[in-house]
Image (tube, rainbow, N blue to C red; front, side, top):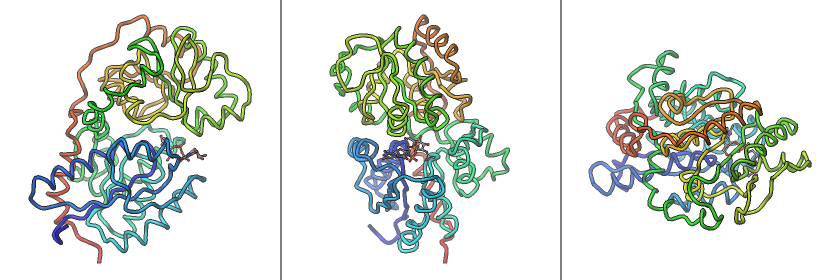
Length: 387
Ligand code: UD1
């Protein structure tokens, strides 16, 4: 790469980061192929997620290059994870001296990398800035707020993100409403996930099953709470089979409560009857294929609220709030909390009404990463490098 190249460090840490980093990597590749001032990108994976199902599969399926550096931080308390990323990232940034560090989303690795970059005075970009649940009991809310405070370029996915940042006093010149990079991944890999055979393998046809994911500490870390939630889902699953790819955190807790959930069976097998089908975490392509064909999705994830909005799949969010309000005002999402009665009532409502057909939210058009890369190429070269 030529010396005048803009040198960017991209940081990934956990599963929801990969589909946000990938389209930026693809956009850089496209831009470099077209010629003009090149961009050199280095990928650093912190290792917050390390299981093959939460890491390798995604890198392969999303055509991400092997990371240039792996920090192997692994699991631990939030403080431990954050501190370890900072400790291990610092010498790499000092050695590589990038023009810019790019972080995405809201996981512990995001805030850790943001802090490290800011303390070393490297310019920082946050992709998916400005989202707020206004619930500081969520670890991600703290991560989002701190990361935004430290960022020089804030790329927002929806109008609420811009308004939140302005209210917090962020200089409007730093805010760029570019759309949603997760939707870029979804669109640009559509030809691949549409070829997934997971539905055939599980014996499912479109619209005859639901998909569920659960991993938020508030929902899964307390065994009794989780059991109550699962009992409500069992009721739902007596109406429609529920495919449930299980996050390791949730699996551990389900094993720890050691009491059977009615109708829950484990293993990737053909769905012959109603019930809950617990599977290992799925890769990106199989998961998107399943979601796209689902009659209903129940989730506590942030990203899945957005993917279902784009795919026009009704989504019930099992949380008290969302940091992604456009999925409710402009999409298919309803934030319904975790009361068993409401979960059952809302599911029945969805099943009895046809699937909606709504236009995508503004700028969710598959081109957000191209916008981000052009803005960075235009603006960052003028940025001060730390001495
Ligand atoms: C993290 C993110 C969350 C994101 C989620 C997606 C934070 C605060 N949370 O939550 O925002 O939605 O990823 O998955 O950053 N574990 C494994 N294998 C792994 C990684 C973790 O078994 O590869 C187990 C470990 O026992 C660990 C637990 O899962 O203690 C939780 O992992 P952690 O990285 O702390 O947070 P997540 O719940 O995955």
